[in-house]
Picture 1 (cartoon, rainbow, N blue to C red):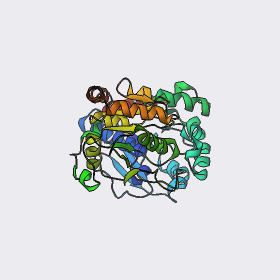
Picture 2: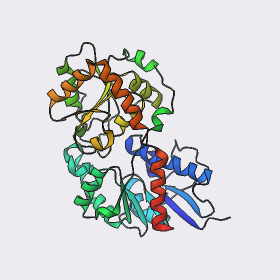
Picture 3: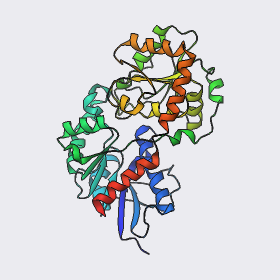
Picture 4: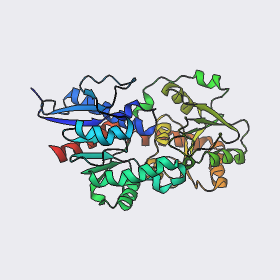
Length: 363
């Protein structure tokens, strides 16, 4: 039977380096594909077509999706000029940007950081996003976002009523899929339980400088701060080098990341602002204790399964590090609470909420 309706999905992000933003989009598409395959989405009624300017080199194997490429230009020009012409029906955009004009749009805006932390972004990127996002939000039938904190901020900034925002959380299961590659520890001279980990870009909002200063102030012997993540000079306003005493390992695969989480004393995540904050959830899923900021979405995401700090107070971050390092019982408690808490965040639940939103608006 030929499906009567088509959902078009902006898949341009599949060609981009994998960060938390792209991870969210890929995991939602993974689940929507499986829901089609398993019959949870009625394939006699719906077809899902991915649209992109060119076929991504590392596209997942999604045989139940149709994939179309075409149109003029690349990047934002393709999104604004070609995508609206290709998407002749409901359009789902999963990664912040979308056409500022499309009659049947559901968009995803992850956070309000370009306003909340403008110094973290390059001038060009910040100006572009502060122009695009309000137009996209106002043009959307529904705006998806990652937390109540983000929904409140974006509603206020864009003047879009809060009722048009739908909060879609992240899941944890991707962190458990790969087998751990423990050779990463030997490669970088690391020992289990004798290092702290930070997973982030170098953007100022992530507060790596504060994390590094806190680790030094905590005075733990032979316990370096290992930093996982790449640089994005065209997007973020980043320092020229990593803070002193950081051991930067760059971008690594998911197997190596799992091994670093599982063997770390803890994750330090002292961001000034987050729309969600995926690394703390990944760490909790893998039994890695977490120290996070008492700001923005962090209490909403981490609940009672983390230690909280003031990201502007290096002494407070250092105090939490010493608390964690000096109390084996606390370490065990946080590992147990973290694993249980992470179980409540599931990608299938997130994808179902996305699909319910699609059907509520376009059925």
